[in-house]
Image (cartoon, rainbow, N blue to C red; front, side, top):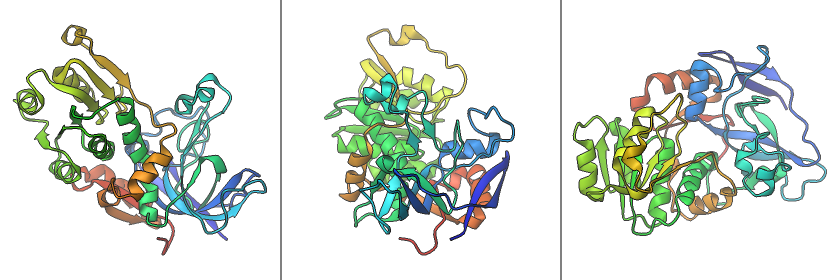
Length: 350
Protein backbone atom coordinates (compact mmCIF):
# COMPACT_ATOMS: atom_id res chain seq x y z
CA UNK A 1 0.00 0.00 0.00
CA UNK A 2 1.10 3.55 -0.72
CA UNK A 3 -0.06 6.66 1.06
CA UNK A 4 -0.13 10.39 0.43
CA UNK A 5 -1.40 13.35 2.41
CA UNK A 6 -2.66 16.78 1.38
CA UNK A 7 -1.19 19.49 3.56
CA UNK A 8 -1.52 23.25 3.78
CA UNK A 9 1.90 24.46 2.66
CA UNK A 10 0.86 28.07 3.22
CA UNK A 11 -2.49 29.91 3.20
CA UNK A 12 -3.98 29.43 -0.25
CA UNK A 13 -1.82 26.47 -1.27
CA UNK A 14 -2.43 22.77 -0.72
CA UNK A 15 0.18 20.21 -1.78
CA UNK A 16 0.00 16.41 -1.87
CA UNK A 17 3.05 14.60 -0.53
CA UNK A 18 4.09 11.00 -0.01
CA UNK A 19 3.82 9.68 3.53
CA UNK A 20 3.95 6.33 5.31
CA UNK A 21 0.90 4.16 5.84
CA UNK A 22 0.26 4.45 9.60
CA UNK A 23 0.24 1.35 11.77
CA UNK A 24 -2.86 1.05 13.99
CA UNK A 25 -2.28 0.86 17.73
CA UNK A 26 -3.89 -1.95 19.69
CA UNK A 27 -7.18 -0.01 20.03
CA UNK A 28 -7.22 1.59 16.59
CA UNK A 29 -8.44 0.78 13.10
CA UNK A 30 -6.66 1.63 9.85
CA UNK A 31 -9.15 3.24 7.46
CA UNK A 32 -8.91 3.58 3.70
CA UNK A 33 -10.46 7.01 3.15
CA UNK A 34 -13.36 7.24 0.71
CA UNK A 35 -14.87 10.75 0.97
CA UNK A 36 -14.07 13.94 2.85
CA UNK A 37 -16.57 16.78 3.15
CA UNK A 38 -15.32 20.34 2.88
CA UNK A 39 -16.30 22.25 6.02
CA UNK A 40 -16.41 26.02 6.41
CA UNK A 41 -13.59 25.71 8.95
CA UNK A 42 -11.50 23.96 6.27
CA UNK A 43 -12.14 26.81 3.85
CA UNK A 44 -11.14 29.31 6.54
CA UNK A 45 -8.00 27.29 7.22
CA UNK A 46 -7.16 27.21 3.51
CA UNK A 47 -7.52 30.98 3.24
CA UNK A 48 -6.03 32.15 6.52
CA UNK A 49 -4.52 29.18 8.35
CA UNK A 50 -6.07 27.45 11.38
CA UNK A 51 -8.28 29.39 13.79
CA UNK A 52 -5.69 28.58 16.46
CA UNK A 53 -2.23 28.74 14.84
CA UNK A 54 0.33 26.11 15.86
CA UNK A 55 3.08 27.15 18.23
CA UNK A 56 5.69 25.50 16.02
CA UNK A 57 5.98 27.35 12.68
CA UNK A 58 7.18 24.09 11.09
CA UNK A 59 4.08 22.17 12.16
CA UNK A 60 2.51 20.19 9.31
CA UNK A 61 -1.12 21.27 8.89
CA UNK A 62 -3.76 19.01 7.40
CA UNK A 63 -7.35 19.88 6.55
CA UNK A 64 -10.58 17.90 6.58
CA UNK A 65 -12.49 16.11 9.34
CA UNK A 66 -15.74 14.95 7.70
CA UNK A 67 -14.77 11.44 6.67
CA UNK A 68 -15.99 8.04 5.60
CA UNK A 69 -14.04 5.00 4.51
CA UNK A 70 -13.47 1.27 4.74
CA UNK A 71 -11.54 -0.57 7.44
CA UNK A 72 -8.27 -1.92 6.04
CA UNK A 73 -6.71 -3.35 9.20
CA UNK A 74 -7.47 -3.50 12.95
CA UNK A 75 -5.35 -3.34 16.08
CA UNK A 76 -4.87 -6.34 18.34
CA UNK A 77 -7.54 -5.35 20.89
CA UNK A 78 -10.19 -4.15 18.42
CA UNK A 79 -13.36 -6.26 18.62
CA UNK A 80 -16.08 -4.21 16.87
CA UNK A 81 -14.56 -3.97 13.39
CA UNK A 82 -12.98 -6.12 10.73
CA UNK A 83 -11.39 -5.55 7.34
CA UNK A 84 -13.98 -4.38 4.80
CA UNK A 85 -16.36 -2.67 7.24
CA UNK A 86 -17.75 0.65 5.97
CA UNK A 87 -17.37 3.36 8.61
CA UNK A 88 -17.45 7.01 9.55
CA UNK A 89 -15.66 8.62 12.47
CA UNK A 90 -16.02 11.26 15.14
CA UNK A 91 -12.93 13.36 14.45
CA UNK A 92 -12.27 14.42 18.03
CA UNK A 93 -10.31 12.26 20.46
CA UNK A 94 -11.02 13.39 24.05
CA UNK A 95 -8.81 12.75 27.06
CA UNK A 96 -11.48 10.65 28.89
CA UNK A 97 -10.07 11.91 32.22
CA UNK A 98 -11.22 15.50 32.79
CA UNK A 99 -14.47 16.42 34.56
CA UNK A 100 -16.17 17.24 31.26
CA UNK A 101 -15.37 13.85 29.73
CA UNK A 102 -16.44 12.04 32.90
CA UNK A 103 -19.76 13.91 32.87
CA UNK A 104 -20.37 12.88 29.24
CA UNK A 105 -19.65 16.30 27.75
CA UNK A 106 -16.49 15.23 25.98
CA UNK A 107 -17.09 17.76 23.20
CA UNK A 108 -15.80 20.50 25.50
CA UNK A 109 -12.78 18.52 26.74
CA UNK A 110 -9.93 21.06 27.02
CA UNK A 111 -7.43 18.48 25.79
CA UNK A 112 -9.41 17.06 22.87
CA UNK A 113 -7.32 16.20 19.80
CA UNK A 114 -9.64 17.28 17.00
CA UNK A 115 -8.65 16.65 13.42
CA UNK A 116 -7.17 19.57 11.46
CA UNK A 117 -6.66 21.62 14.60
CA UNK A 118 -4.42 21.71 17.66
CA UNK A 119 -2.42 19.99 18.94
CA UNK A 120 -1.61 17.72 15.98
CA UNK A 121 -3.41 19.32 13.01
CA UNK A 122 -3.92 15.88 11.50
CA UNK A 123 -6.21 16.18 8.47
CA UNK A 124 -8.49 13.64 6.82
CA UNK A 125 -7.23 14.33 3.30
CA UNK A 126 -5.04 11.27 3.01
CA UNK A 127 -5.38 7.77 1.55
CA UNK A 128 -5.03 5.97 4.89
CA UNK A 129 -5.42 7.07 8.49
CA UNK A 130 -5.77 5.46 11.90
CA UNK A 131 -8.49 6.22 14.42
CA UNK A 132 -9.62 4.85 17.82
CA UNK A 133 -12.19 2.09 17.72
CA UNK A 134 -14.50 3.86 20.16
CA UNK A 135 -14.79 6.93 17.90
CA UNK A 136 -15.45 4.85 14.79
CA UNK A 137 -18.97 3.89 13.69
CA UNK A 138 -20.47 1.28 11.38
CA UNK A 139 -22.48 2.52 8.41
CA UNK A 140 -25.75 0.64 7.79
CA UNK A 141 -25.99 -1.16 4.45
CA UNK A 142 -28.53 1.35 3.11
CA UNK A 143 -26.20 4.30 3.70
CA UNK A 144 -23.69 5.39 1.09
CA UNK A 145 -20.13 6.40 1.89
CA UNK A 146 -21.00 9.95 0.84
CA UNK A 147 -23.72 9.99 3.49
CA UNK A 148 -21.17 8.59 5.91
CA UNK A 149 -18.84 11.52 5.35
CA UNK A 150 -21.70 13.94 6.05
CA UNK A 151 -22.70 12.39 9.37
CA UNK A 152 -20.29 14.82 11.05
CA UNK A 153 -21.98 18.10 10.00
CA UNK A 154 -25.39 16.47 10.45
CA UNK A 155 -24.44 15.69 14.06
CA UNK A 156 -23.70 19.37 14.62
CA UNK A 157 -27.23 20.27 13.54
CA UNK A 158 -28.73 17.46 15.60
CA UNK A 159 -26.80 18.52 18.69
CA UNK A 160 -27.88 22.14 18.35
CA UNK A 161 -31.53 21.17 18.03
CA UNK A 162 -31.29 18.69 20.92
CA UNK A 163 -29.86 21.43 23.14
CA UNK A 164 -32.78 23.71 22.24
CA UNK A 165 -35.18 21.36 24.01
CA UNK A 166 -38.77 20.61 23.06
CA UNK A 167 -39.64 22.02 19.62
CA UNK A 168 -43.02 20.35 19.12
CA UNK A 169 -45.36 23.03 17.77
CA UNK A 170 -42.70 25.72 18.23
CA UNK A 171 -41.80 28.41 15.71
CA UNK A 172 -38.16 28.46 14.74
CA UNK A 173 -35.92 30.85 12.83
CA UNK A 174 -32.60 29.72 11.38
CA UNK A 175 -30.10 32.40 10.43
CA UNK A 176 -27.88 31.00 7.70
CA UNK A 177 -28.59 28.10 5.35
CA UNK A 178 -25.10 26.80 4.81
CA UNK A 179 -24.40 23.17 5.63
CA UNK A 180 -25.07 23.44 9.39
CA UNK A 181 -28.19 25.54 8.87
CA UNK A 182 -29.57 22.97 6.41
CA UNK A 183 -28.84 20.20 8.90
CA UNK A 184 -30.61 22.15 11.65
CA UNK A 185 -33.66 22.58 9.41
CA UNK A 186 -34.02 18.83 9.07
CA UNK A 187 -33.41 18.15 12.74
CA UNK A 188 -35.98 20.79 13.75
CA UNK A 189 -38.51 19.33 11.31
CA UNK A 190 -38.03 15.86 12.79
CA UNK A 191 -38.58 17.30 16.29
CA UNK A 192 -41.95 18.72 15.27
CA UNK A 193 -41.31 22.44 14.76
CA UNK A 194 -44.47 24.07 13.39
CA UNK A 195 -42.72 26.84 11.46
CA UNK A 196 -39.12 26.91 10.26
CA UNK A 197 -38.15 30.30 8.86
CA UNK A 198 -34.75 30.48 7.16
CA UNK A 199 -32.73 33.58 6.30
CA UNK A 200 -29.74 33.78 3.96
CA UNK A 201 -28.38 36.01 1.21
CA UNK A 202 -27.68 33.24 -1.34
CA UNK A 203 -30.64 32.11 -3.41
CA UNK A 204 -29.33 28.61 -4.09
CA UNK A 205 -29.12 27.95 -0.36
CA UNK A 206 -32.63 29.27 0.25
CA UNK A 207 -33.96 26.98 -2.48
CA UNK A 208 -32.26 24.01 -0.83
CA UNK A 209 -33.70 25.09 2.53
CA UNK A 210 -37.21 24.90 1.07
CA UNK A 211 -36.53 21.40 -0.29
CA UNK A 212 -35.36 20.22 3.12
CA UNK A 213 -38.30 21.50 5.15
CA UNK A 214 -38.21 25.29 5.59
CA UNK A 215 -41.75 26.68 5.70
CA UNK A 216 -40.62 30.19 4.73
CA UNK A 217 -37.40 31.73 3.44
CA UNK A 218 -36.23 35.32 3.28
CA UNK A 219 -33.32 37.24 1.77
CA UNK A 220 -31.23 38.60 4.62
CA UNK A 221 -30.74 41.89 2.76
CA UNK A 222 -34.45 42.73 2.83
CA UNK A 223 -34.90 46.04 4.69
CA UNK A 224 -38.21 44.87 6.16
CA UNK A 225 -36.82 41.47 7.16
CA UNK A 226 -37.72 41.62 10.87
CA UNK A 227 -41.33 42.54 10.13
CA UNK A 228 -41.68 39.76 7.54
CA UNK A 229 -40.27 37.14 9.90
CA UNK A 230 -42.67 38.17 12.65
CA UNK A 231 -45.59 37.95 10.22
CA UNK A 232 -44.79 34.24 9.97
CA UNK A 233 -43.76 33.31 13.50
CA UNK A 234 -45.74 35.76 15.67
CA UNK A 235 -45.78 39.44 16.53
CA UNK A 236 -43.45 38.67 19.45
CA UNK A 237 -40.88 36.69 17.47
CA UNK A 238 -39.62 33.12 17.21
CA UNK A 239 -39.59 30.66 20.10
CA UNK A 240 -36.08 29.54 19.14
CA UNK A 241 -33.53 31.27 16.91
CA UNK A 242 -30.54 29.30 15.60
CA UNK A 243 -27.53 31.35 14.51
CA UNK A 244 -25.58 29.09 12.13
CA UNK A 245 -23.85 31.59 9.83
CA UNK A 246 -21.07 32.48 12.26
CA UNK A 247 -21.41 36.22 11.67
CA UNK A 248 -21.79 39.23 13.94
CA UNK A 249 -24.64 40.55 11.78
CA UNK A 250 -26.73 37.41 12.20
CA UNK A 251 -26.01 37.25 15.93
CA UNK A 252 -27.36 40.80 16.25
CA UNK A 253 -30.35 39.86 14.09
CA UNK A 254 -31.16 37.03 16.51
CA UNK A 255 -31.71 39.60 19.28
CA UNK A 256 -34.36 41.32 17.15
CA UNK A 257 -36.45 38.30 16.28
CA UNK A 258 -36.40 36.14 19.41
CA UNK A 259 -39.58 35.95 21.47
CA UNK A 260 -39.83 36.95 25.10
CA UNK A 261 -38.65 33.94 27.14
CA UNK A 262 -37.33 32.48 23.90
CA UNK A 263 -33.95 30.92 23.15
CA UNK A 264 -31.03 31.93 20.96
CA UNK A 265 -28.78 29.01 20.00
CA UNK A 266 -25.36 30.15 18.77
CA UNK A 267 -24.21 27.25 16.58
CA UNK A 268 -21.95 29.28 14.29
CA UNK A 269 -18.34 30.17 15.02
CA UNK A 270 -18.45 33.96 15.36
CA UNK A 271 -15.08 35.73 15.31
CA UNK A 272 -14.38 38.89 17.25
CA UNK A 273 -16.60 40.77 19.70
CA UNK A 274 -20.37 40.73 19.23
CA UNK A 275 -22.21 43.62 20.92
CA UNK A 276 -25.29 42.49 22.82
CA UNK A 277 -27.97 45.02 23.74
CA UNK A 278 -29.28 43.21 26.79
CA UNK A 279 -32.09 45.77 27.19
CA UNK A 280 -33.67 44.25 24.06
CA UNK A 281 -33.71 40.74 25.51
CA UNK A 282 -34.16 41.30 29.26
CA UNK A 283 -37.47 39.45 29.14
CA UNK A 284 -35.94 36.14 30.22
CA UNK A 285 -34.36 35.31 26.87
CA UNK A 286 -31.71 32.55 27.00
CA UNK A 287 -28.53 32.63 24.93
CA UNK A 288 -26.87 29.21 24.54
CA UNK A 289 -23.66 28.48 22.68
CA UNK A 290 -23.36 25.13 20.91
CA UNK A 291 -20.08 23.29 20.38
CA UNK A 292 -19.78 20.36 18.00
CA UNK A 293 -21.64 17.32 19.42
CA UNK A 294 -21.49 14.66 22.11
CA UNK A 295 -23.11 11.23 21.99
CA UNK A 296 -25.04 12.25 18.86
CA UNK A 297 -23.50 10.02 16.19
CA UNK A 298 -25.68 6.92 16.73
CA UNK A 299 -28.95 8.85 16.52
CA UNK A 300 -27.71 10.90 13.55
CA UNK A 301 -26.69 7.77 11.64
CA UNK A 302 -30.10 6.26 12.41
CA UNK A 303 -31.92 9.37 11.14
CA UNK A 304 -30.02 9.29 7.87
CA UNK A 305 -30.37 5.53 7.42
CA UNK A 306 -34.16 5.72 7.94
CA UNK A 307 -34.54 8.42 5.29
CA UNK A 308 -35.47 11.26 7.61
CA UNK A 309 -32.34 13.24 6.84
CA UNK A 310 -31.22 14.04 3.30
CA UNK A 311 -27.51 14.75 3.44
CA UNK A 312 -26.38 13.35 0.08
CA UNK A 313 -28.76 15.68 -1.75
CA UNK A 314 -26.84 18.62 -0.31
CA UNK A 315 -23.57 17.47 -1.91
CA UNK A 316 -23.70 19.30 -5.22
CA UNK A 317 -20.04 19.44 -6.18
CA UNK A 318 -17.48 16.62 -6.15
CA UNK A 319 -13.73 16.90 -6.60
CA UNK A 320 -11.07 14.25 -7.02
CA UNK A 321 -8.39 14.04 -4.36
CA UNK A 322 -5.74 15.02 -6.89
CA UNK A 323 -7.68 18.26 -7.40
CA UNK A 324 -7.72 19.28 -3.72
CA UNK A 325 -6.24 22.69 -4.55
CA UNK A 326 -8.99 23.33 -7.08
CA UNK A 327 -11.60 22.14 -4.57
CA UNK A 328 -10.61 24.76 -2.03
CA UNK A 329 -10.22 27.51 -4.59
CA UNK A 330 -13.70 26.77 -5.89
CA UNK A 331 -15.09 26.77 -2.34
CA UNK A 332 -13.59 30.22 -1.76
CA UNK A 333 -14.50 31.82 -5.06
CA UNK A 334 -17.87 30.27 -5.93
CA UNK A 335 -19.90 30.26 -2.74
CA UNK A 336 -22.97 31.31 -4.69
CA UNK A 337 -22.69 28.13 -6.78
CA UNK A 338 -22.00 25.68 -3.97
CA UNK A 339 -24.07 24.04 -1.25
CA UNK A 340 -21.66 21.33 -0.12
CA UNK A 341 -18.38 20.28 -1.65
CA UNK A 342 -17.03 16.75 -1.22
CA UNK A 343 -13.59 15.42 -2.09
CA UNK A 344 -13.49 11.89 -3.49
CA UNK A 345 -10.33 10.29 -2.07
CA UNK A 346 -10.93 6.60 -2.70
CA UNK A 347 -11.54 5.40 -6.24
CA UNK A 348 -14.65 3.32 -6.96
CA UNK A 349 -15.72 3.25 -3.30
CA UNK A 350 -19.46 3.35 -2.58
